[in-house]
Amino acid sequence: MSLGLGRLRAVLAALGDPQVGLPAVHVAGTNGKGSTCAMVESIARAAGLRTGLYTSPHLCRIAERIRLDGAPIDDDRLERALARVLAAGPELTFFELMTAAAFVVFREAGVDVAVIEVGLGGRLDATNVIDAPLVTAITSIAVEHAAILGNTLAAIAREKAGIVKPGVPVVVGPVAPEAEATILATARERRAGPVLRVVRAAAAEAGPDAIALLAGPRGAVVVQRPDALGGGELRAEIGLPGVHQADNAAVACGIAWLLTRRWPAIERAIADGLATTTWPGRLELVPRDETRVLLDCAHNPHGARALAASMAARPGGHDPSRTVLVFGALADKPFEDMLAVLAPLAARRVYATPKGRTPAALDALEAVAPGEVAADGAAALARALALASPGDTVLVTGSIYLVGEVRGALLGIDCDPVIAL
Image (cartoon, rainbow, N blue to C red; front, side, top):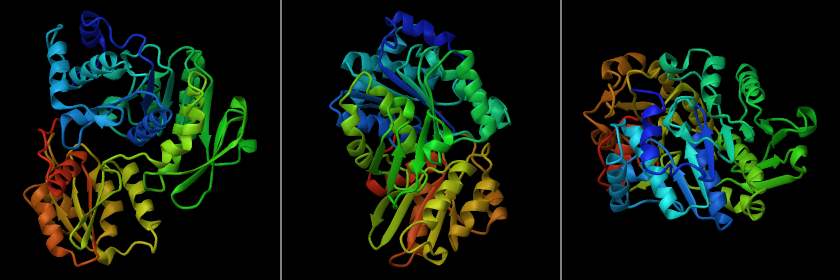
């Protein structure tokens, strides 16, 4: 892995700097940044804007990373954009190549707004060549990629706050005080603002810059607009399942409210956009005969805990005796901590090795919680379906690459090669 912005800036300059002047929303975070980006894109599209969305990694097809008006671009368009980038200058990493291609596609398509998800960290991430976004946001902070980002919440928050820019508004999700203090200090140093904070309390208790996330019925959200932006309350259904999506929806609302300064129509589109958001592989239910297959990209302990909470909150609760777990992880992930949360969700478990970077050894997974092993994701799915009884749930989680492989097998999608970036 090679972090830094110099190579990419040189190539973009040769391409005419397609990222310069691009109306963009830039979102970082440990978890939730992809879902938040999907919500913001859906809101903008509901307001009638032409949208671009750049995310990573892909589940099945590389072209999923670059979307126009909610749909992945076709392979021909991707090939043309990649060819332009490859011809423009020095050799790039795969992620840099895809980032440049996204900017080329968005510029050629004339998008009104591009929603850009950070790949890793923020400060040195390839997407941070965006020098003047409309809004930046940080959804959550948890320990991840410690060898690169640091092993404390403050250190990780500092890296992710690297996307904060002078004069640009910032939305901060509900993060630990240590992380919030670091982000707010960075915003002050760079004279960014306004800075809006999502809090799980009444706005009166948190100050005029607070986006108050209030309790609501299952699948819905109640969010109070900050007094600094005029106040008021929004009630909306959330199209993405999972109790943790309320946090992401609150961040998306903050971004949307800031964007209404440029596009007033967004105000009326927020509820519709949240209700119609879709995001594959995030508590995605795919029926298979009489069995329910639930796909979720919970690839770190923070995500595993969110998944467990969402399973417990499902109507009727959660019955481990009616659940088969399919799990695999990369060796550089804290898979023991993840399995400590996920293994109790299922009475039977099937382990598989995800493609991409070095996988966690199957015997190491079995040492944490007993289970069967399979050669790959497709074989693990087949075995889990055989173990399941009618009405049971097969829960597929862990590595994003494993979820993508299983999703392709379920839906008959010919998946592109896994590229672990």
